[in-house]
Image (cartoon, rainbow, N blue to C red; front, side, top):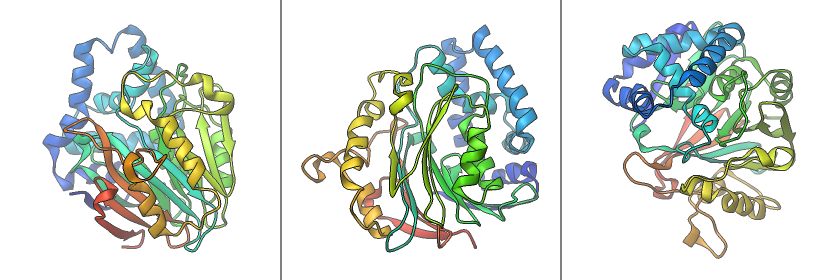
Amino acid sequence: MSVDLSLAGTAYARGRGQAAAGQGVQVRAATAGRVESARAEGLFDEAALAYLAAQRAFHAQEDPDGMAELLGIAEGFDLPEPDLFAHLHLGTLRDLKGGAALVDGCSAWAVAKGPDGPLVVKNRDYSGLHLGIQTLARHAGPDVASGGMLCLGSLGSPGAYSSGINAAGLALADTQVAVATHGVGWLRYFLMTRLLARCATVAEAVTFIRTSRHAGGGTLVLADPSGATAAVELGAGAVTVASGAQVWRTNHLTGALAAETLAPKDDAIAGNSRDRFAYLARVLPGADWARAKARALMATHEASAPGAAPICQHGAADTAQTISSAVYSCNLRQMDFCEGNPCTGAWRTVSLSA
């Protein structure tokens, strides 16, 4: 079962507070254990270590709160902090070696209006190792200028490791994309938490993104109570921003950045990304998206209807699969949450206010 946490205080204190949930053995397997396996494979060569050092210097300068949270997590679970930092960069490091099968996938979309107001919706496709260590964490502290955050993430990782909403009603979710080019800049997993902590609107978040350097790879989907939306593609050299009544992203880049996407490495997540994207492009426009209808869409399989795509993805053991689904209501500052595949129908509603 997922872990509900209420974390208050400095970023370091909130990071350390994760350890109160226990699950240390599984947290180690899902983080430092993956790093140890990658180290044995030879991933951490001289070039990789140099890149990690440059990334560490960047985040120490630009995101001291994020680094403090990571240190608190490491000390709470008695794990090497450098391993946790490296774990967050595993996808990036594999991209720099030509890519690998996606473990972190996801389908995400947002609508500007509907019976329940603006929504941000995401299926979290990730390693089954994170089943049981997913967190629904409320954050409050001196660095959270937005007034509070409700984040879906995992024990052993920073706050908004997958998606979240803040007290201003700004909601966001990400998707992973393997790309050919990376640089020194904001890693998405740190960026998401900082956007929710600092920004009240989509416009503020987009300004922050446009005026920052990025490591590259992945997308963000955002909405706020005004009905503003954005789909942001994060390139190392440029970012693109789209808005509209509906926006959506899966696991490839589009438009000006499309050529950056690495070809699938024999994995289902990257292999069906374009089918999922095309399906969302067909079904999202022209409909009134209430929360119940959004939940039903995220349970879609290829066999659900003619031309349907595997929005809800199934896997085994520690392979990539849909480990949760979230529907964020910007107006209500709450989320509908289903742990595991959303086709199970095991949804519950969680509010930012306890």
